[in-house]
Length: 270
Length: 306
Image (cartoon, rainbow over all chains, first blue to last red):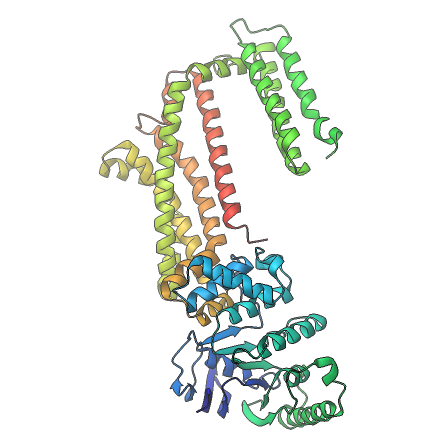
């Protein structure tokens, strides 16, 4: 049994009397401990798909099974990182993480929760900023806190909706490497199942075991591609290999052919 | 801050000017109690020097000495216009020394009246704020109820609460409870409107972040929606506080047997304008102190906002 099974998912929207099909008949599955990226141009429904996984949106037909059970709403088995910093502005970095921990681990005392928060803030390199409010932190730092919170909650599944989409190129690289390092771990504990939405092909290749490429209007799965590179991965070494560039070009060709075929001249951010 | 910036300020020259003005010959024939003005000025000056020595922010010091300068300037003008040149009618405008003398002479009575007034304002205000915030959170959570209640709060809030005084007098057992009731109404509607507007405008991203953390309804309401609405709630609370001050004295002037409004009304009825002025000054001080405390609380609770 797969960890996550997406079965014939269709989502229709009605907006100003127009009917949109955001997702049509989307099916694929994700194994336990697998890192899967969903990639596609804007309008391909990748964020809609993730919101259904998060449990804050519901399909018109079809279903998603987690461990064989259909999703009925939000749940403590899934941790989420949004593109827009999802921290609570009235809580310090530390309190934000501890608040997340509290929701999944009701039995932990306040001191234990704060200790877990400190531990994970240290992992993302923010031990000196734990008492700062989000407004006092840069975008990249806020996203580190959000990642720390999602990891501290220790859920089976991590859902990440373009988490580095609003961050400048240099910091994005740093955060991708941090995520990779934290997720790959030291081999002592099982890896989490990650669903990662992005529109950045390099990001998808670096991080994922599998890339699900989607097309727009309506959102459909275009292709599932296994990423053949061994772990642990090192960006600097990986990008210099011939295999990497060949693989990347193949994906780009696929991505562009899809865009040309499907949506013509619309602006696409890569 | 340099020593020059700390201590070389116009305020100290005004202090000396105020003392010198007191030494001019009086034109007013009754006792002007100039000594009380001098003692008051010396007290304020010592406070100013202490603040000058301890304060860290230059802007804060500037604000403080500007306020003190204003007080000194006012006292100079007041002394000149009354005691020294007798330009105003002495029965209506007693010299400042006389007011200070009266203030000290009446301190027990004034203290009791301050307690009475502050008690009324705290009871009415805190009760109204607590009820309005909880009700606003609950009503605002439903779009339909929230919309209706917003209109209702706007309509009912626009009626000056003072018009309810006759009903209050007819229905409530004591004049004190009438005052509490009027303050309650003055605070209730703006806080309710502010809370609902806050609740109904919480950022969807904030709500989604909370939802994916799988928070229960209680946590959602009190740990997410309440703090997220706090800036708007404070707008309502500020509005309520301002109106409460206005209404407190008005309410106390009608029928009450205690409080600062009663003190003023009582003595102005007897033509005792020295005590009327004492009452006005004390009310001013009480309002400043409460507002200062309120601002401190607001600043603390909204410290995460920039």
